[in-house]
Amino acid sequence: MIFETKAVAVGAMLAFASYQDLKTREIDDRVWLIGGTVGAVLTACEAATAQGYPYLLAAFSVALTAVLAFGVYFLGLYGGADAKALLAIAVFFPFSPASQPSPFFPLTVLGNSLLLSVLLVPACLIINLAWALSGRPLFDGVSASKTRKLVALLTGFRVRPSAAMKVHFNLMEVTDGSGGEVKLKLFSRVAEEDEEKRIGRGREYVWVTPAIPMIVFFLAGYVLSLVGFDLISLIVYALLR
Image (cartoon, rainbow, N blue to C red; front, side, top):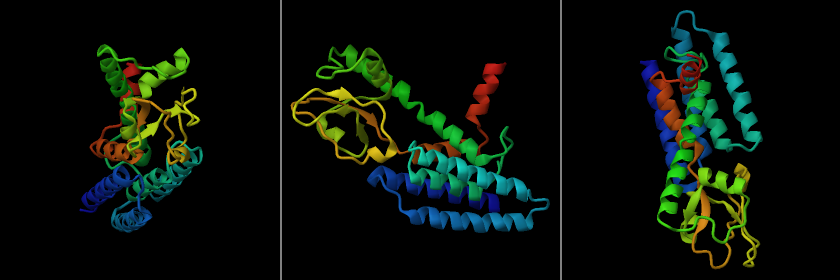
């Protein structure tokens, strides 16, 4: 019963956080505070009632997750909410509830989430191929090397300026705002995503990258992990066969 309660609680926590992040690009810290508290209580109950509970493994898993989660955050590769989400998952499930190659459930969730986020690459490529086949130019008015254009094809696509101003997209074009040269900015740190968007004059379409919150991929990665899928282990196993 404790396992089922944990599974539902984590799913509800991540689903609510995903809804908030998609809507406002912000997640209330109370989501992680309440979720982490509930997780700690449930895990304590589980440890008290389970015979031979692996306390050291649980403690090591939470500590390892905290170091990794906040280490990646301080590198600016994802937001603070993502680090808190991963730590909250570790408090609920320090080790894998199902038979998996890795005993560390939070790291399995992280690996699944990162691999799922990579699916944006073929999605962007398909959109750009459809755009090119329609006869419309992809890089008119943009100054960029062939290498940068190739990366742009894999990480973004073109939308109208009105759409680019919405929270669901990050602008890939850099301009001084005076109608000068427009260049491609391929990658942004998380802290830069909230900066004011400046679009050059007369731009009918601009390059953007989809700003799907990482927490959404955490939700999907969690579901896969809960039912026993470890995508990284499956890929490694397939390559080594």
